[in-house]
Figure 1 (cartoon, rainbow, N blue to C red):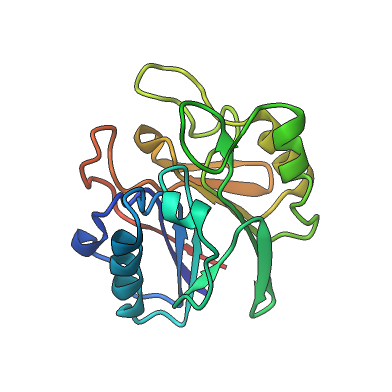
Figure 2: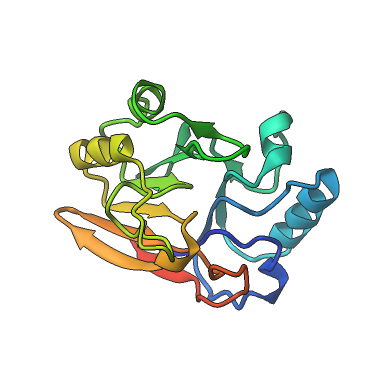
Length: 202
């Protein structure tokens, strides 16, 4: 299965050049902060794409997802939930460590640990909005801001892939042990479309 991965489109998705594949994964920050109009525009766009499967999670800028019951979408919406497709087990969560007044955020420690404990032990592809601590999580100010509690769970579960975004300037791929980590943010620190979608095979 050929999977196309993107995150942090922040309403630049119409300008993306997407390769062919079997599945599209969107790892949050579509950017629906200003409501239903942006939500509908994203749904119209993703409906037009010719992928057999589409998986979407929300991110901290996705106010509409946080404040509404998301149903009847043209994609599989994962919100601390999973799905099995062609024998591959996917699990998705919008959660990232708390800062400012955004959405889907949890305090580090017990609060976030409760979320990550829900990740099944047999997950093949983990999709989160935020990165784990120390892996593709360094900001432009040289701070590592990933979630330590998420890292501990990922090291235990050992998914084949962990796909995320959130920290735009940390785009890239890094393999540690049995897991390939992918920060697939397509915009840069200034929210300009810069990075290409990342393609994986599973």
